[in-house]
Amino acid sequence: QVQLVESGGGLVQPGGSLRLSCAASGSISSLYIMGWYRQAPGKQRESVASITSGAWTVYGDFVKGRFTISRDNTKNTIYLQMNSLKFEDAAVYYCNARETWNTVGYWGQGTQVTVSS
Image (cartoon, rainbow, N blue to C red; front, top):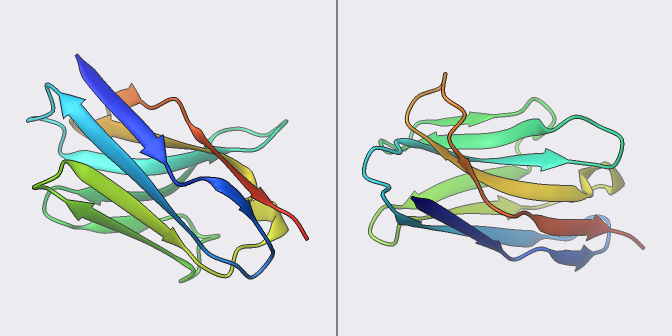
């Protein structure tokens, strides 16, 4: 069993920053890919950023240099540093861990990010 626990969400003004964390525990040795997804009300869940165990990263097009994903393998934790936040970044952010790009993997419970002035 795998547990993913997100933290770091909250309320931020446009242009502000947040740092999300996702701590993984359990049977995680084969979960080479971890990432962040988000889902806003009425919209489909979309990929924000992913990182492999070798630190190769992939970002959604909308990120455009504003977000940075990182990984601490010693702590089984990934981070998402979000800068220059926009209203449209408001969503529930979910952590995901999977074995390959073609598997669904495991999901965390989500953390709310609200962008409001």
